[in-house]
Image (cartoon, rainbow, N blue to C red):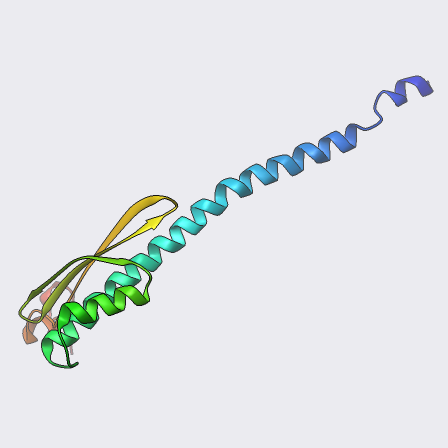
Length: 129
């Protein structure tokens, strides 16, 4: 009888090694995806910051030139300014960065509300109480 039990020696070790390998494979797959998602969100936030900086400068709230303000915000975010357009006091910017070896772009637009009437309207155009 003892001989039959000896055939199972080390089976637990093999099982643990297999489980550890499976966890390592899943972790090594999920880590880059998670980092890519985080960097993408940071790129969108950089685009938003650049558009707000440009719009504030275009409106006169901040001194300087709108696209230079956008460029400064983009550099702080660690990205590259691809495009900056100013239409009155509305700024539209596009920024880019390499995320896991792939070029990613994000765009944003900022400016004042469309009209005073639009800012007083609720959902469906109903006025606020």
